[in-house]
Image 1 (cartoon, rainbow, N blue to C red):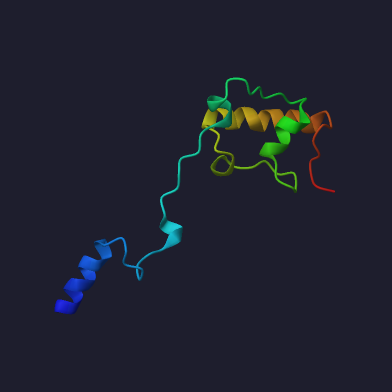
Image 2 (cartoon, one colour):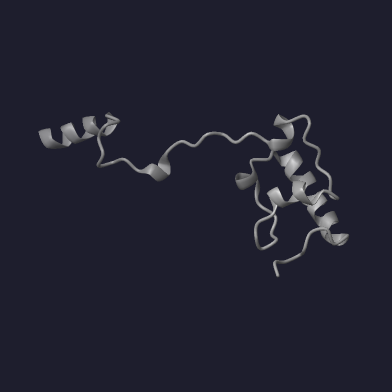
Length: 94
């Protein structure tokens, strides 16, 4: 009984390594690149600007990866799709 009680107390102790799981670590909130930087302009004709939001296979990166807010993620998606239409960005990797 005393052993269980000590184990419970140790779980609250941050130095207790047995229950430490690095995956459950609290991550820092990402700041939207479009909200944070007022000079950053999203333009579908600018390839360098678009490739930050596309992975190596040509897929659009999700919000959790880019850190963009919902409003700007929709703008990013629209700009990437327009860039694909005019052949600035490829649909798939070659």
